[in-house]
Image (cartoon, rainbow, N blue to C red; front, side):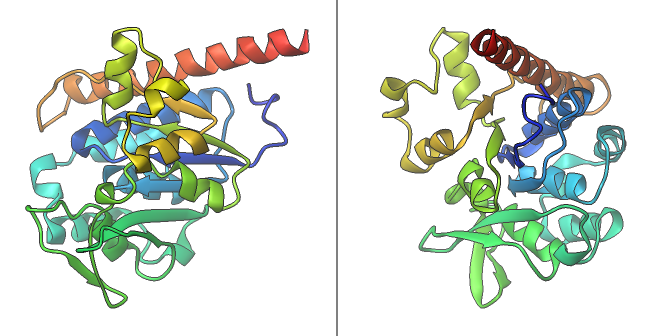
Length: 252
């Protein structure tokens, strides 16, 4: 697969989804096994946490070790999240190794705000500020809440960064539920019934990965954590294997 995408500028879009976002680690693990290294990364909410770790140069093992040390219900408290970022991530976007953006939503307009420069912890905090749970984060003169209110799956923003081929990891569950009952979410007929911002994401993505994530509660540690990561890994292998076979058939 890597040789088939050798000329592409690869973008990785990571959805929100709370602790389900840990499945993104499995997606990254499988991409790495395929030799696929994203050139651009965009993350919403939990996806912004994993995306920032990837952009900082962490591998999936390092991410898994950090995830195992977190009490997830407390992480999404603003101060705890910023402390987490200060401990594990660079202070600014400029210090990241790879281009990365975090997605937030302006309140009350719900307009998408793309955060790409300046202080990194406050950007991730804004991207993860769940409505009704936390107050809006004040940044750049704006009141910002969780990016899921504006762009839950940032495939379009990562393409706008310069990606020519976009892999989107959707852990929100919409696509996996449809596939479980034999419905392909990327077909035009089905796509019509999605919210506008989700349709935009599907249109911008070349590959959609939608892990079937097990129910592990709000504290996915130990075997629960590994089950979530394994779900992301398995879904990615399945999609990439299918794409490789299709491309080989086209070039035969």
